[in-house]
Length: 246
Image (cartoon, rainbow, N blue to C red; front, side, top):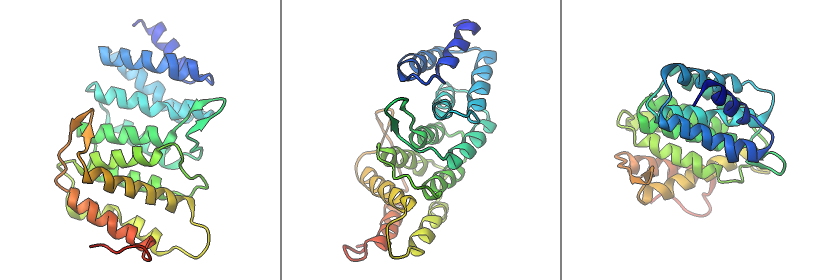
């Protein structure tokens, strides 16, 4: 793909028209990355994607992580990519999954997809991935995730837990902010971050109790029992009237 065509595709990836952005630009760019970009073009694509994280329009920001994830899957990685996307992901305020006019936005899900990709590729410390994911879950918001963001985040956590460099102690420590959030709960409506986190943990427990997958292939998760036990311990805090850990 010529640089001019690449730039046209990157421009389309910020379009407010979901057919242009999601229907044409995204698959075209993903195919180009998968087919192989030279080093200069790959660096250019990454630079544009990272700049988009500061774009004033939501749809331009939220599709940037998918570009970085594609580059990681293609075997390219720069540690600065993860740190910049993680800062955006945790701080992003527009957490709508779908908009009637803009189509899919999915900031939470797209960030989770990058977490999963980085974990599976073993290119980012699993503790850093865990910390960012937990931070995204507990970050104050009024938005309850409704478009399977919880499942995408849980899928990402499965890949993090499967990382061979993650220890049981680090896993439990990484989830400790969730424990503090649940233990500090007060009577009244359940805050959105607490609801979102409960949903993520329940999805995580289900996934780890079955055969986790990555790219349709089975994933071995040595710390599955530890993760399930800790998730259940956390969930027991918010449903003490229903069940207790076995």
